[in-house]
Image (cartoon, rainbow, N blue to C red):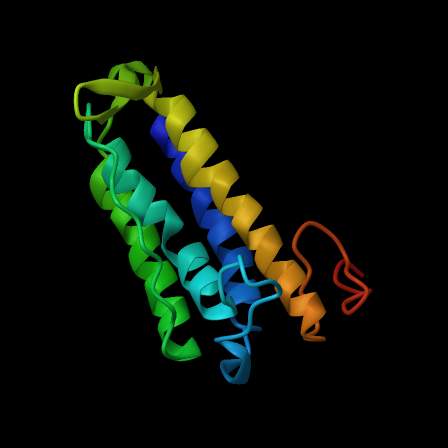
Amino acid sequence: MRIIDALIGELEQEAKTTARVLERVPQAHLAWKPHPKSYSLGQLALHVAGVPGTVAALAAQDTPSSPGFAQREAASTRELLPALEASVAKVREHLGSFDDARMTATWRLMAGEREVMAMPRVAFVRAVMLNHWYHHRGQLLVYLRLLDVPVPSVYGPTADEQNAFA
C-alpha cells in the first residue's frame, strides 16, 4: 500500500465523522462567537469542511509561497456538507497519484526567498491536513456544546449519545 492510500483511507473515515459534526451546526447561530477573537461558528464550520482540500492543494506543490488566508463565513448550513465532499475530492485529485518517493520528498513553504517550513510531504499532510483538521473539529464540538446542541459521537459516546456503541 502506498503512503497516500493510507492517508486517504484515514481521511475518508474521518470525513464521515466530520459530516456528523457539521450536520449539527445550527443555522440560527452561524454568526455566534464564543469570544471576540474567535472565528464565528459559520467560519469555523466552513474551515472544518474545507481544510483537507485546501491543504492538499498546497501539499501538491513542491515549494509554494505562504498563502494569504481569510476565512469566510458560511451563509447557510446547506453549504457545509457539499463543501466537505468537495474538499475530500480535492485531496484525491491533488495527491491521489503521488507515489511514496513524492510523499517522502522534502516539501517547503516559502515566504518570498525565506523558507518558513521544510519537512517530508507526508509529515506536512499528517500534521496539517489531518491533525490540524481534527483540532478544529474538536473546537467545533466545543462550540456546539456551548450552544447546547447535542454533541455527536466522534471516538466514543458523548453525554448526548451514551448508546453510540451499544
